[in-house]
Length: 320
Ligand code: GYE
Image (cartoon, rainbow, N blue to C red; front, side, top):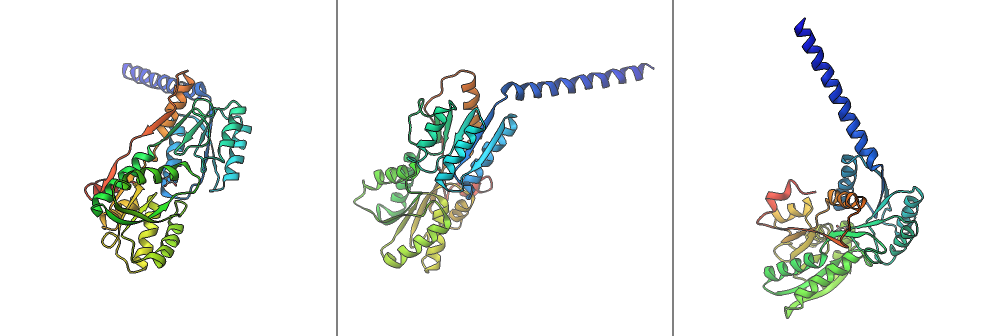
């Protein structure tokens, strides 16, 4: 009898515990009760997919409702996506803006609607604290300076460089050109002999690099790509033209995606500077801090690492 009694007590206590837990979960999600909109510019590369997944899983983890839109690389669509999020009366907008000038309009629309915007991974025209809450991104000048330094080291300061730039009109492409130039300008014999956009994509880079090889093939000794996808495209084009990347031509790039780390291990790529896409936790921390009435700093910098032959193996499995 006593045994049955204690067993019953345990069951009752467990049931109360479960209920309390449920209540607590409901309380936390209802307590926040917020809806966040996320306007992604495109979702077609390992980097973008990793960023999107990081935002999505963090929202889910915190019980925050997320409305996701993908502008599919179309700037007009991205502006109307933001309009749609405003109509949905979201409490915050996370905006990964494709182009600097054009997406300034989206900032104004959100501002007029009184919805705070968090810029993610690129800038848009406006002022922090006024037109948007904050920018969460890597330091692109630092990244590209590191790429320049590594290339100088690998080529002993003598190189005819092809620069494959990112999307024209994006803040990141402007800054990744600038930081790199800061460094190579210090070397008399480092010159950019061709600079062309391949829109951050592997397919375009393969084509662009192919045509540069046809025009200036013999002169090229190095490639600086604004992201890994373009570096991979360049590697494919070089191999297709019978040129040996890593030996005849030294390549550096930015992002730290898995294919790039594999290319380092295969000696095709000299180095890649990380651009960490896992910004979900930081982004929702900002939202929660803002909800709690804290003042938010205008620029939240993501810290990045450098991947070379020395550490690529160690990181390849955890890369995106
Ligand atoms: O490096 C690239 C992506 O804006 C930081 O955009 C981002 C860049 C990233 O397409 O791969």
